[in-house]
View 1 (cartoon, one colour):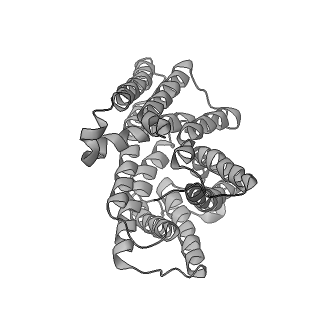
View 2 (cartoon, helix red, strand yellow):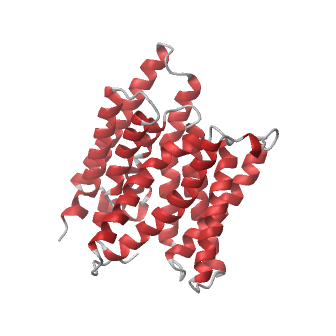
Length: 308
């Protein structure tokens, strides 16, 4: 997407950044709250079908041409990779792992973009800061896994948790693959319409996955606690609609390098919220791992930030 820095009211810019920083950072906490009442994949289906339908309705009101076959196909493919492959692993992992730990691991996403962006390997691997970022990021992941393995040996970390942690390494990879696929196949549709189809397609794919996991059996919406309903409402309205709209608008009025700073703030918000509101325990090693991973993301983006 082409970005510009055209004039925009300062107050609206501040509000938009606050939404992207705080809301996206808090989604990990609210996902965990939602799956205490919803089966994980059914929760994904409800969230993204409703959010996609809302976004599609908005696009219709804005007068967008809703059906362009090629664009819908691209959106469906990228949406399934990001929101089913990437987000699905997050949802699954949060069954057994604290939301703060999940957010720390997911923050390696920018590393996956470098690893999977094959057309730019030659350019990226000539950059000392990018190569350094990959090495530092790998060290951060090793740090977190080392602690988890030691806890597992002492019986403080279950095998299922260790498997979930391993799966989380590949979740951001699926997200990056979806983003790169979408970038490689640009269409004529506006970003809001692409996002609507991405969410709707992902939500529909979650339904058979949920059925295969036998999640419909015994599920009774009447038994879902109010807290879980409020959490999924937050994820739909704020996480999937409002925050994304703020993100797209920011890209149109502020430099992309400024907007990308959410990658540093979101995991910090997730950790703070998990510890404060969720009473989660975060070790010194996990905080150190978060710092190392965020340093790696900074190194990967260093040349972009310093470019005039």
